[in-house]
Image (cartoon, rainbow, N blue to C red):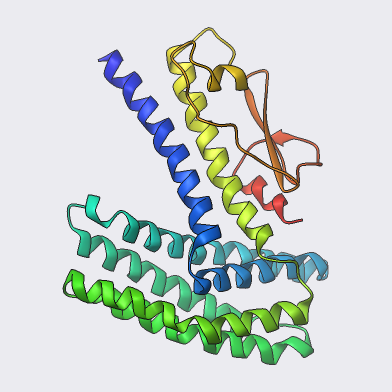
Length: 269
């Protein structure tokens, strides 16, 4: 029983790290329309930094609300990549598409309802309009009745890229925001924090009286390796272990603090 539990924890550690790698790969190698959505959410978050205190609070909430939309894109792409491993591939795809459609509708509503600088309001409206084809595509996919139709609809969704991406580029230019790499870093940070958390859990289960270190998690002693490579992504963030506790500096030049997913927001630099 203990052997099975230990193997389960090791499998969780491996799965978490693999998930982190897939997340980073999908974020950096995904379709242009997803990158456009990433740029939109990045714009919302970075706008918060230059707004007044009241506006900053509001737009920070908007940014937080929009993260599920981006996560839903990644979930749909991840489902499509691993569709063969699902007991019901069609149900998995339609469920992920339904979630994406809902999050994109929320994203669009917030684009329309928020107060933007006068020079950017028209661009925000254009960006909101450019989201409509993606919403329609996700809704259609959610209603697919067979896997062939679902595959065709997935391909069709990518054709909505051009107007959406153009609107994003224009909007980002109006607000003078950095590239989407900052948001890529936040996603990678969240995946990496989760990976290290699971690795620590597995190590502690096997070595109850040993203080974990990076070297022990990476090494072959004490039941390792518990993690294949140590995550780092300067200048956006750095993860360290101090006295067995996971610390995160985001950005990497800032003071390290207990690692949480929310703390990864600091990777916007």
